[in-house]
Length: 273
Image (tube, rainbow, N blue to C red; front, side, top):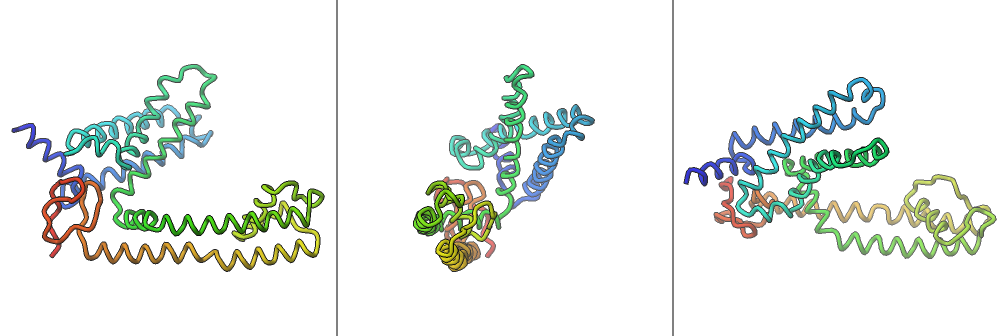
């Protein structure tokens, strides 16, 4: 009974945001995440690493131990530990600590590049911030809801890129830099997205006409994904203002009188009204 009560207290602090202790925990964790990411960035600077590398190494292990304890406490206090472990945030939490431990098993100076690559993965800690930003969660849900529309949009863009690329390969040819259809498609995508590197340019009149059509097409379609995401974000914000969200799985859509989450079964926070 005592252990169960202690487990519930930890759960309210770690997963809950409706208590002062939970809010303080979230704020402290955000600062730790930001400091750890700053340490990683500084460690990548050669001059800083040569002078403060040892201190940054010790600081990294301090952050790793703290985040490891947090990860284990989340598993311990979660009503459904496996659900948390295999959730998006659970995987991000694991990715934020595993590289430091993996680096211990990569001995030898010849493997230092591998170690550096593993250490870069610690930047995944910044994704942990998403859990504490409701606006970011709204954005993620809007992106997920718009995935089919965006997929159709990119399919259309890809088809147009293949058509324009094939035409440019036929008209310009290898002598003007369009050495293959894939390279011509690359030029088309650069042109449609208005990036314009200038590494390949059409030289013939017909090629320039096709390039003009590709540019106009790019300006015509570039605003489409923005409109899709804007509509989905507006819909999610409207839903957010009229429904309640679970603090554990972040699912929304619960009735105001609901006491438990429809998805994971935990107790919902008190309704604002």
